[in-house]
Image 1: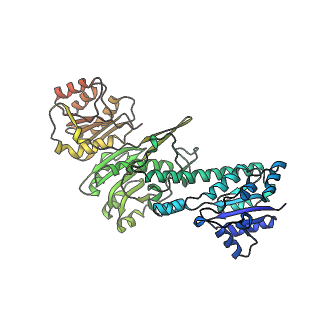
Image 2: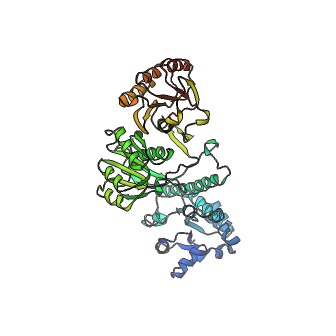
Image 3: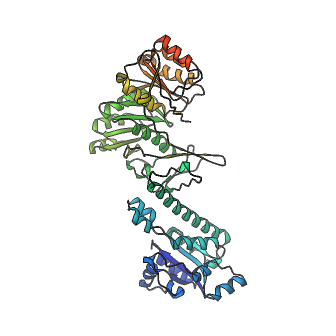
Length: 509
């Protein structure tokens, strides 16, 4: 009995060579409309699918491959019963299925409207792939032009089970990704947008944007996967430097998100996913100088995010210190020429606009945790004065914004001290809050006098307030909610330090 291959592809790359390879093995070709025309015009012996099914495509191409003779040929096993059933309806023996789906993902990237995107949802192609992948022991299934050369290294009839199951696995991954991208897009079309963290099933799929040399350490394989249809580092412009590493991307994301959360112009320096210096200023250069002077030791080898446009003068300052990555909203041509003198530094630009909603995912043994990303802003309307004298909040406003926003990006337990629109002390990653406070205050030294001290969570005892009083801190802002809040309030009253509660915490574990 003749053996057949079914071909229905939107991407014609490598199709002619693949078809010729099948024909050389004695495999006959059946193809859908556009695929048939492509092969026929090149003089290849191919039959249109309607010769088998007896009907032409309908509904503008929405229905063209859904027919028992096609699926009987794909799904039949080489058993007496299946062969009898297959022959009873005139279905051929199909040994290969080659399909790549309507380009929903590509059109999504191009910004196609909803009506256009709906027409890019493949039905028949997905069904063909699933049928062939289910019957992989008897049918070769290919979904990507990059697979064609590998598939032709052996005759289809001589492919090992291990080869066939690998093709099938890739096929199911292809379909799963395709469906996940559509589901994610539909979630954004809902009003309000669907928040997957509230759903019974959480599906997220990404396409590999780049294979990374390694992960956090050289022995750990790693890759970056971009979520189709979403902006981020996959859409950033990279002017120079090597591809970003795993650690670069993790640090850069922290720097960018903190900078995007603060008023412009600002500068954020990050090391090991923790801010080491943050500054606000009237100009971007002034903000950067403050971020640098906050901790000129830790910034070495770090990541800098700059909310604004980098000019020639600032570029010269940036070149004076070793940095791994610089991210800004924009650069002048003169600034890019100066930064190009340091070829290894990665220079990126991207919008500094936080998405309205985003998930944060962390894997654990046996599964993963999902939460909405923390969005941090000073709750001015509900800010509660609970101890010490009332502060002149307009005078402290910028430092309160800086300290409170930054503390949400420091590893818990977290304490941030800010003065004159720059961080002067940062303590985090400690197993108790008093050690984090001491770390921040020791770093601040005399600059703590009159500064704002922010804490990501409540003070369990009055010791942090006492430590802040010893350094003559000007204002303390913390969530409150401890059973011993009275101890902190008592110290604030006795030592005359304004104490404010926000009523919300910002742990970052």
